[in-house]
Figure 1 (spheres, helix red, strand yellow):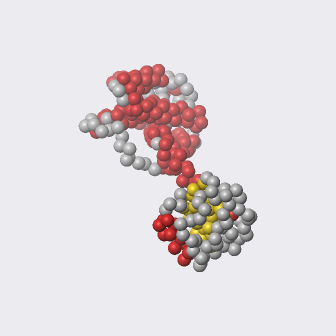
Figure 2 (cartoon, helix red, strand yellow):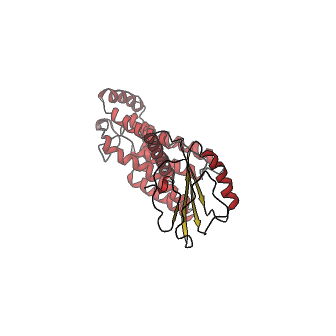
Figure 3 (spheres, helix red, strand yellow):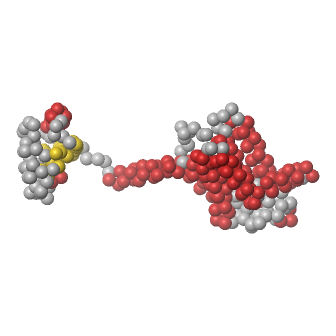
Length: 319
């Protein structure tokens, strides 16, 4: 299978997918269509019995009916082979690569070349992208991924490239598509496959982007406030002392807050440094409590509540 260490930036795939759609809309313009027609005429000038037979075979072999059968057979064969995870990957690759063509066709709605020049009769009126190229490329990618860690990697990859190139020429040769339709299919298919196979990375990517937006709106962080969190501090006397010593020094120039989640005792193992106000104790014999010590803060304070221990100047305990 494809190495999990292989990485390609998700934003690039999104940009390629959008770029492919933009190319499809641009290809609807008369000037672009005229240029496409000129290239198509050059390809179609090589028509003959043998090229036509090969092009028709590719047309039928990767059409809606036969193409669906081939995709199902490939997925089932991989699953029966005992590689269920690989079968799911093949299914995702084909569904994403072929499906993106079905989604973009009605969206772009580019008319097909004139039927008078076509050797193949298509079912739909929309030309961009080519569904045959999308399916051919998707299946080639799926098979290449299956062979990626074997000695057949490069032969399979080369055969897939030849097959896709043949399908591109066949669609233009038969008059079913313009050249832009087939080349645009390469862009959107590869982008869709990459996004689908890296869907798990999409969530963290969006989360990081949202965090960056929130950070920009919040502005630079305050250098005045210092917050220290201790979990289950009692019973860890050395750890507390290690924290309180630098915290006492920092309190001369900063608003220092230490929050400790503890199992309460009547008193700590040692006195709180003078730089910190002595905490007020409430119901110290029961269960867990939250203790806040603060120094260097001028905020107001509130009366400690049941099960909490708040220093008189603690920002977290201020009213």
